[in-house]
Amino acid sequence: MPERLADNKVTEQLNTLSGWQRSGDQIEKDFEFKDFAKALAFVNQVGDEAERMDHHPDIFLHSWNKVKISLTTHSAKGLTENDFELARKIQKLQS
Image 1 (cartoon, rainbow, N blue to C red):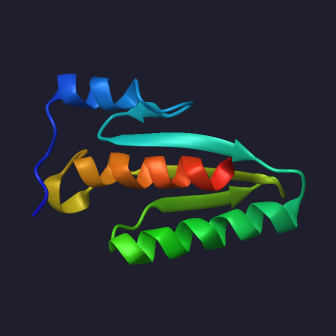
Image 2: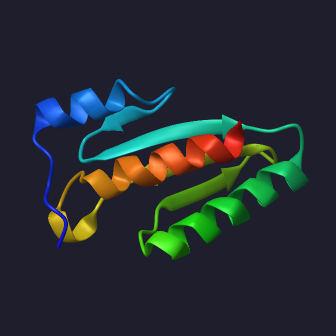
């Protein structure tokens, strides 16, 4: 099982990411796209990355062009390196 990160490590990791924020025991980011099709394509890409890592985020597609991603490691009851690794992969999908 992945090890839960200490608060100072979470802060360090967050400083390496653009636009991600901590909310309790998870990190989250809102993404906005040109249209529904692009938002849905992004969700599918995130799903593919999550499957490869066997680490699954909460994904909320709303307002036809917005996607909110929330990451946490349920088995560790908090944030682990896996959450930040997936966040970095998600960031690359958007660029």
